[in-house]
Image (cartoon, rainbow, N blue to C red; front, side):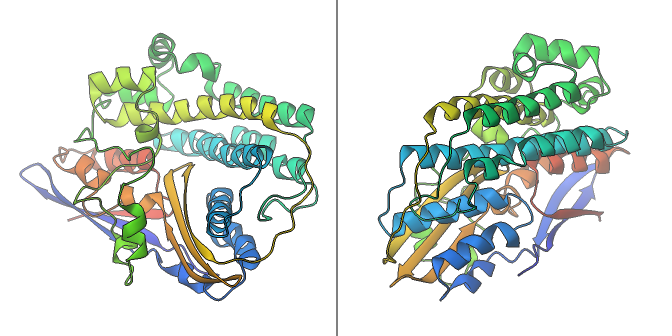
Length: 381
């Protein structure tokens, strides 16, 4: 339906260091306007197809926003199933990055066999939960609770990740075990980063996204007539960071690493491992909340809804206005607009980096750690 376009990062070097980093975006941040005047069910089925990444999170956030606008409350079992699907996507996205991108960034070959196993382990979860394909029904679709199949899929994903890392993921995110793993296997990207002394590169003032999102988010989105806020969001002049490091900064491993390296590269890489471990653990817990339920049948209503989802790349916001069963306004604020803001976390991380022969490599590592949802080009000026 529309292209996700891309980002470009231009570095200006002066006196042997990065003096400025300029980010330009051609992302169509107002493309959701195309959803206006369409029925909600049509938009819900468009969402996972028009976004190349995090399609499940996009669709679920839209579904929750529409339910909120229509004053519909999904059952606890439906909420558990939806969260399970978003977490499955999050685990898959992090697993694919570690299997595909980390080896390439470390100078090796992508481990595509492991990537295939991780993706395949959780790919059928949607059909297991909603065999009739009505997972995007407002109020809830026809939900089954084949807990044995779901647990088997989660266990298969866990085994694939263990084979990839060479270590049980739950143990790996314990501080002592993580440090031993770094020293034992410097071929993994985190081990290489430590061996090169790059653990703290990119450390800058850390402004983590509040757990419930910016306090002024609802007002800013509701009054954003020209799309400027969606393109360059802020909160009282502050540009928050969202994603694994912000979400898991309280975790013992991340807290320990940030005490030593600030918001540097190694804590960012470790936060992705924590997201994997915690995602698998939460999925296993959610299985207990599932139970079979029939689909709901609900009328079209009017109202306004704003909902947030912690997706693989950070906090995702959807706002929808319904009028007599049709969409009159639709807005999406994605994590990339925060993390790759012209005054955001990446710019803060890049400022002052030494302009040594490894500069472009380091920049690519930091960009990958913040994980944009589109391609990002780098130029040196």
